[in-house]
Image (cartoon, rainbow, N blue to C red):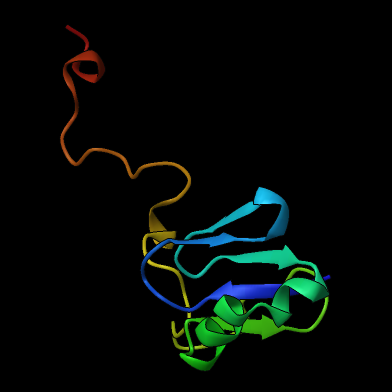
Length: 92
């Protein structure tokens, strides 16, 4: 299995033999069989620098300076608190 990464800021839909489909969000990684990398459509995406083939297992971002970080990644998790209290927080 090889790990591929979507280097664009748009989601990708990759179709493989047997009707299997891989949806890759912006900056996300996914694993594909080695034979899938031989497909002409995948090779074209690799040459166009849309996909990056990584060695082996799941990859974690090791970039510094914010390069290669998926958009909206900072908005995950808990939302920041409101700057003014909501009606339920004011007590009445």
